[in-house]
Image (tube, rainbow, N blue to C red):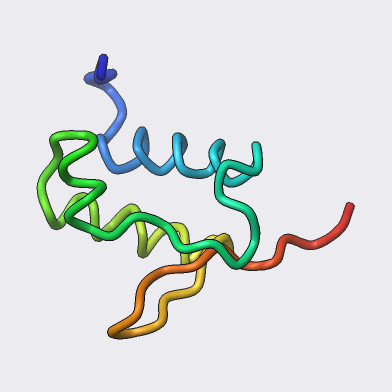
Length: 78
C-alpha cells in the first residue's frame, strides 16, 4: 500500500473500511476482519488495527461484541 506520509495510517485504513462498508463489501450485520487480519492485510501495528475498529465503532459504522467480533451496523436510510 502507498502510505500518505501526512495522514496517520489508522485514518488511511479507516477510510478503506469506510468505503468497503459504503460499497456493500461488508453489508449490515456482516463481521469485519479482526485486529490480526487487519494487521496482516495492511502491515500495521496491532494497536493501529485496533484503533481502526474502535473508530468505526465510534462513527456508528460498527458494533463491537466482546469475545465475538466487530459487526457492521444497519446504516440509516437516506
